[in-house]
Length: 224
Image 1: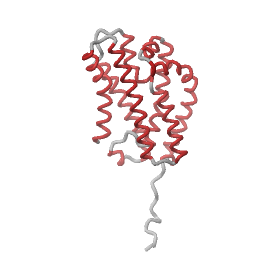
Image 2: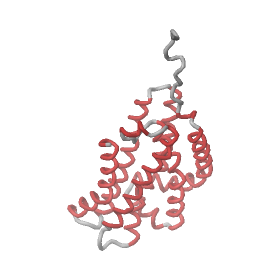
Image 3: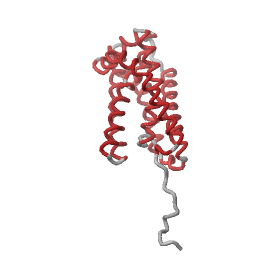
Image 4: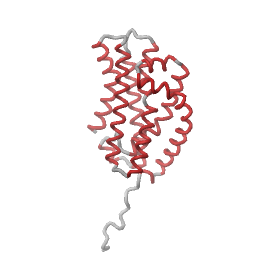
Protein backbone atom coordinates (compact mmCIF):
# COMPACT_ATOMS: atom_id res chain seq x y z
CA UNK A 1 0.00 0.00 0.00
CA UNK A 2 1.08 3.54 -0.64
CA UNK A 3 2.48 5.53 2.25
CA UNK A 4 0.39 8.48 1.01
CA UNK A 5 -3.24 7.29 1.20
CA UNK A 6 -4.61 10.54 -0.26
CA UNK A 7 -2.20 10.72 -3.16
CA UNK A 8 -4.64 9.18 -5.58
CA UNK A 9 -7.67 11.11 -4.40
CA UNK A 10 -8.61 14.00 -6.68
CA UNK A 11 -9.34 17.27 -4.91
CA UNK A 12 -12.65 18.98 -5.50
CA UNK A 13 -12.35 21.45 -8.39
CA UNK A 14 -12.35 25.14 -7.59
CA UNK A 15 -15.38 27.21 -8.57
CA UNK A 16 -13.38 28.85 -11.36
CA UNK A 17 -12.18 25.47 -12.66
CA UNK A 18 -15.65 24.36 -13.73
CA UNK A 19 -16.21 24.98 -17.47
CA UNK A 20 -19.85 26.02 -17.01
CA UNK A 21 -18.83 28.66 -14.47
CA UNK A 22 -16.15 29.99 -16.80
CA UNK A 23 -18.64 30.27 -19.66
CA UNK A 24 -21.22 32.00 -17.45
CA UNK A 25 -18.54 34.33 -16.06
CA UNK A 26 -17.49 35.39 -19.57
CA UNK A 27 -21.13 35.98 -20.48
CA UNK A 28 -21.62 37.98 -17.27
CA UNK A 29 -18.62 40.20 -18.05
CA UNK A 30 -19.99 40.76 -21.56
CA UNK A 31 -23.36 41.79 -20.12
CA UNK A 32 -21.69 44.09 -17.60
CA UNK A 33 -19.75 45.85 -20.35
CA UNK A 34 -22.94 46.28 -22.37
CA UNK A 35 -24.76 47.68 -19.35
CA UNK A 36 -22.20 50.35 -18.42
CA UNK A 37 -23.76 53.07 -20.57
CA UNK A 38 -27.24 52.36 -19.18
CA UNK A 39 -25.87 52.39 -15.64
CA UNK A 40 -24.30 55.84 -16.09
CA UNK A 41 -27.52 57.16 -17.62
CA UNK A 42 -29.57 55.85 -14.72
CA UNK A 43 -27.11 56.63 -11.93
CA UNK A 44 -28.62 60.00 -10.84
CA UNK A 45 -32.11 58.44 -10.77
CA UNK A 46 -30.92 55.40 -8.83
CA UNK A 47 -29.13 57.54 -6.25
CA UNK A 48 -32.31 59.63 -5.88
CA UNK A 49 -34.21 56.42 -5.11
CA UNK A 50 -31.87 55.83 -2.17
CA UNK A 51 -32.29 59.41 -1.01
CA UNK A 52 -36.06 59.90 -1.35
CA UNK A 53 -39.13 57.74 -1.91
CA UNK A 54 -40.31 60.11 -4.62
CA UNK A 55 -37.18 59.17 -6.55
CA UNK A 56 -38.79 55.82 -7.41
CA UNK A 57 -42.03 57.58 -8.37
CA UNK A 58 -40.18 60.03 -10.62
CA UNK A 59 -38.21 57.24 -12.28
CA UNK A 60 -41.36 55.21 -12.96
CA UNK A 61 -43.06 58.32 -14.38
CA UNK A 62 -40.35 58.54 -17.05
CA UNK A 63 -41.24 55.67 -19.39
CA UNK A 64 -37.86 55.72 -21.10
CA UNK A 65 -35.92 55.58 -17.84
CA UNK A 66 -38.25 52.92 -16.43
CA UNK A 67 -37.73 50.68 -19.47
CA UNK A 68 -33.98 51.23 -19.28
CA UNK A 69 -34.02 50.33 -15.58
CA UNK A 70 -35.96 47.14 -16.26
CA UNK A 71 -33.58 46.09 -19.05
CA UNK A 72 -30.52 46.91 -16.93
CA UNK A 73 -31.83 44.86 -14.00
CA UNK A 74 -32.50 41.94 -16.34
CA UNK A 75 -28.93 41.97 -17.66
CA UNK A 76 -27.51 42.14 -14.14
CA UNK A 77 -29.29 39.04 -12.83
CA UNK A 78 -26.59 36.70 -14.18
CA UNK A 79 -23.55 38.41 -12.57
CA UNK A 80 -25.57 38.83 -9.36
CA UNK A 81 -26.33 35.10 -9.30
CA UNK A 82 -22.73 34.14 -9.99
CA UNK A 83 -21.52 36.13 -6.98
CA UNK A 84 -24.22 34.49 -4.86
CA UNK A 85 -23.12 31.06 -6.02
CA UNK A 86 -19.37 31.66 -5.69
CA UNK A 87 -19.71 32.62 -2.00
CA UNK A 88 -22.68 30.32 -1.28
CA UNK A 89 -24.72 33.30 -0.10
CA UNK A 90 -28.11 31.62 -0.50
CA UNK A 91 -27.68 27.86 -0.53
CA UNK A 92 -29.83 25.39 1.42
CA UNK A 93 -28.08 22.44 3.05
CA UNK A 94 -29.14 20.06 0.26
CA UNK A 95 -27.02 22.15 -2.15
CA UNK A 96 -24.08 19.93 -1.11
CA UNK A 97 -25.77 17.07 -3.02
CA UNK A 98 -25.92 19.10 -6.23
CA UNK A 99 -22.95 18.49 -8.56
CA UNK A 100 -20.73 21.56 -8.78
CA UNK A 101 -21.42 21.93 -12.48
CA UNK A 102 -25.11 22.53 -11.70
CA UNK A 103 -24.69 24.83 -8.71
CA UNK A 104 -24.62 28.13 -10.64
CA UNK A 105 -27.63 27.22 -12.84
CA UNK A 106 -29.49 26.14 -9.68
CA UNK A 107 -28.70 29.50 -8.05
CA UNK A 108 -30.01 31.30 -11.13
CA UNK A 109 -33.17 29.22 -10.87
CA UNK A 110 -33.55 30.08 -7.18
CA UNK A 111 -33.27 33.82 -7.85
CA UNK A 112 -35.71 33.58 -10.76
CA UNK A 113 -38.14 31.68 -8.52
CA UNK A 114 -37.95 34.50 -5.96
CA UNK A 115 -38.65 37.08 -8.70
CA UNK A 116 -41.65 35.06 -9.90
CA UNK A 117 -43.04 34.59 -6.37
CA UNK A 118 -42.70 38.32 -5.71
CA UNK A 119 -44.42 39.15 -9.00
CA UNK A 120 -47.22 36.73 -8.11
CA UNK A 121 -47.64 38.38 -4.70
CA UNK A 122 -47.91 41.79 -6.36
CA UNK A 123 -50.57 40.44 -8.69
CA UNK A 124 -52.60 38.66 -6.01
CA UNK A 125 -52.32 41.33 -3.30
CA UNK A 126 -52.41 44.38 -5.56
CA UNK A 127 -53.34 47.40 -3.40
CA UNK A 128 -56.81 48.67 -4.13
CA UNK A 129 -57.64 52.20 -5.22
CA UNK A 130 -54.09 52.95 -6.31
CA UNK A 131 -53.39 54.31 -9.77
CA UNK A 132 -51.53 52.14 -12.26
CA UNK A 133 -48.32 54.17 -12.05
CA UNK A 134 -48.08 53.80 -8.27
CA UNK A 135 -48.72 50.07 -8.55
CA UNK A 136 -45.96 49.80 -11.16
CA UNK A 137 -43.64 51.83 -8.92
CA UNK A 138 -44.17 49.39 -6.07
CA UNK A 139 -43.71 46.38 -8.33
CA UNK A 140 -40.44 47.65 -9.82
CA UNK A 141 -39.05 49.42 -6.76
CA UNK A 142 -36.77 46.55 -5.77
CA UNK A 143 -35.03 46.74 -9.14
CA UNK A 144 -33.97 50.33 -8.47
CA UNK A 145 -31.47 48.96 -5.95
CA UNK A 146 -29.97 46.03 -7.86
CA UNK A 147 -27.50 47.98 -10.08
CA UNK A 148 -25.80 49.83 -7.22
CA UNK A 149 -25.98 46.76 -4.99
CA UNK A 150 -24.20 44.71 -7.64
CA UNK A 151 -21.55 47.42 -8.03
CA UNK A 152 -20.83 47.26 -4.29
CA UNK A 153 -20.81 43.46 -4.37
CA UNK A 154 -18.28 43.46 -7.21
CA UNK A 155 -15.99 45.77 -5.25
CA UNK A 156 -16.41 43.50 -2.23
CA UNK A 157 -15.58 40.43 -4.32
CA UNK A 158 -12.43 42.11 -5.60
CA UNK A 159 -11.38 43.04 -2.07
CA UNK A 160 -12.05 39.51 -0.85
CA UNK A 161 -9.82 38.04 -3.55
CA UNK A 162 -7.09 40.62 -2.98
CA UNK A 163 -7.07 40.10 0.80
CA UNK A 164 -7.53 36.31 0.48
CA UNK A 165 -10.18 36.35 3.15
CA UNK A 166 -12.07 33.13 4.02
CA UNK A 167 -15.21 32.42 2.02
CA UNK A 168 -17.26 32.52 5.22
CA UNK A 169 -16.22 36.15 5.76
CA UNK A 170 -17.18 37.07 2.22
CA UNK A 171 -20.48 35.24 2.60
CA UNK A 172 -21.36 37.26 5.70
CA UNK A 173 -20.37 40.61 4.16
CA UNK A 174 -22.34 39.96 0.98
CA UNK A 175 -25.40 38.91 2.94
CA UNK A 176 -25.32 42.16 4.92
CA UNK A 177 -25.02 44.18 1.72
CA UNK A 178 -28.02 42.42 0.21
CA UNK A 179 -30.01 42.86 3.42
CA UNK A 180 -29.20 46.60 3.49
CA UNK A 181 -30.35 47.09 -0.12
CA UNK A 182 -33.56 45.13 0.55
CA UNK A 183 -34.18 47.22 3.69
CA UNK A 184 -33.83 50.43 1.67
CA UNK A 185 -36.24 49.10 -0.94
CA UNK A 186 -38.78 48.01 1.67
CA UNK A 187 -38.58 51.34 3.47
CA UNK A 188 -39.19 53.28 0.26
CA UNK A 189 -42.10 50.98 -0.63
CA UNK A 190 -43.57 51.63 2.82
CA UNK A 191 -43.25 55.38 2.26
CA UNK A 192 -44.88 55.16 -1.17
CA UNK A 193 -47.77 53.15 0.28
CA UNK A 194 -48.00 55.35 3.37
CA UNK A 195 -48.55 58.43 1.23
CA UNK A 196 -51.84 56.95 0.01
CA UNK A 197 -52.91 54.37 2.58
CA UNK A 198 -53.57 54.29 6.32
CA UNK A 199 -50.91 52.96 8.68
CA UNK A 200 -52.32 49.46 9.27
CA UNK A 201 -53.22 49.04 5.61
CA UNK A 202 -49.69 50.05 4.62
CA UNK A 203 -48.19 47.48 6.99
CA UNK A 204 -50.44 44.67 5.75
CA UNK A 205 -49.76 45.40 2.10
CA UNK A 206 -46.04 45.67 2.79
CA UNK A 207 -46.08 42.26 4.46
CA UNK A 208 -47.85 40.72 1.47
CA UNK A 209 -45.85 42.45 -1.27
CA UNK A 210 -42.29 42.51 0.10
CA UNK A 211 -41.86 40.69 3.40
CA UNK A 212 -43.69 37.48 2.41
CA UNK A 213 -41.55 36.70 -0.69
CA UNK A 214 -38.33 37.47 1.21
CA UNK A 215 -39.46 35.39 4.19
CA UNK A 216 -40.26 32.43 1.92
CA UNK A 217 -36.79 32.64 0.37
CA UNK A 218 -35.06 32.83 3.76
CA UNK A 219 -37.17 29.97 5.12
CA UNK A 220 -36.30 27.83 2.11
CA UNK A 221 -32.57 28.48 2.52
CA UNK A 222 -32.57 27.96 6.29
CA UNK A 223 -34.93 24.99 6.58
CA UNK A 224 -33.84 22.96 3.60
